[in-house]
Amino acid sequence: DSVAPYCRDYRALLLEYHGAVTWGETMEQAHYRLECLEQLANVTLHLKTLGCDRVMPESLVKDLEGLRPAWGIK
Image (cartoon, rainbow, N blue to C red; front, top):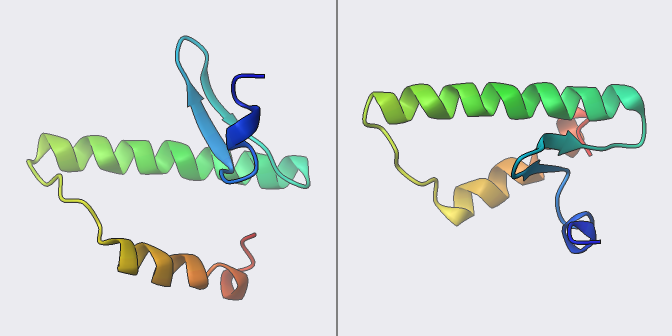
């Protein structure tokens, strides 16, 4: 019940003491999202280690989200 409000707006969650949870229309989609989340975490760790922890502007995030349909990502 505590995570239900987030499930509509997000495709993955990091749960304290539990780890990552992803979901999708198929098991393959959920697995792909988990792999993406893991890769993002890895890149983020390396960037922070190197001292590069800038935040991406919201406008750029929206532009990238707009590319999802062309890449077959829902």
